Length: 371
Image 1 (cartoon, rainbow, N blue to C red):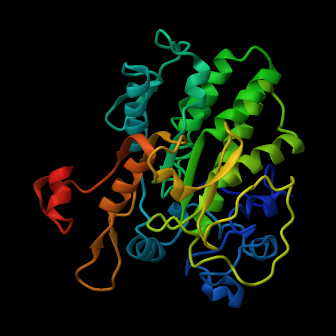
Image 2: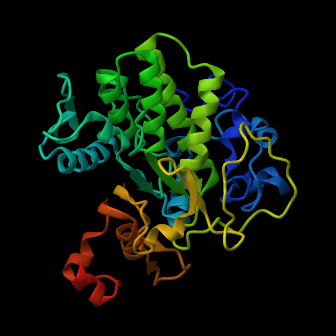
Image 3: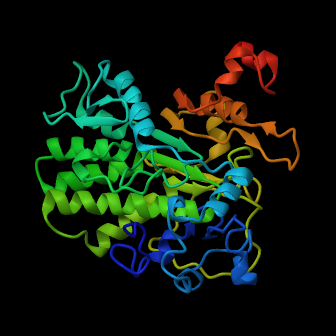
């Protein structure tokens, strides 16, 4: 199988320390996983991920879940509800969001079963809507893992590489629209950065989050190379990374906080730019994100308050179904993720167990009825 994540090669080489930034803690993201504890004291759940630690691994250690051995996959599924979402499911769900936005079917591709055919004609927009509105449409993937809904370099269930002309991620669709409409390279870059600013995701486990960030950076680079026949410059990469690290952050989705709180050990974090974080968390672990249109940072939990002007047009994803209580009566949590999603978005599309439709399972009966 092709090596999908390379820490010592373009575009990550020399910039890994920036991809590890946590904008809330002003430190580094943490492992938040027991998968690496065998390497020693610096690899615990609450240990910060550093360039030195990661480059000490063999290259295939930080790799998509499909590469991990079956026993580790099973353990991470049981403890962290980490699941595969096949590309055909991702495409079907992204298509449905775009059907809502465009008010027509089969905008980017036509799907039949587990395969799809790309629509090759230039994308047309509904009367009264402009292509720039689509690029600016805010979309959030919750519990994003490797960010399969946002970018589609490979099928997360098989590891099979997807060629750029067949890609189906949300950012891929936005970049295709920019390719078709930007008049020159300068305009293309302006809107490519705005596309990055419009996609968000959060994830609990540090290795998944790093993979998601790398997948998004690689996708940006793939489109630069395809459209302009060159590699992205270091300045372009740094600007993209700064956006990515704000928009894809580490969070416990049930509490809107940094997993395990802010790391206590001292660690000096180099930054690419002066910090634009103009607020501090109300507690030392409430997660902060950035509103690029108003140029202000905001606590993620504040988005759930009535009257907040920053909302997502769509929330999408495959959230955990239940919390592992190490017994026979695990607590369902998908209902909590659904309720939280409706607080921050106009439209929500999540994979959930079908049983709640039949008033079955362990979710509250009044919640089942409401849904």
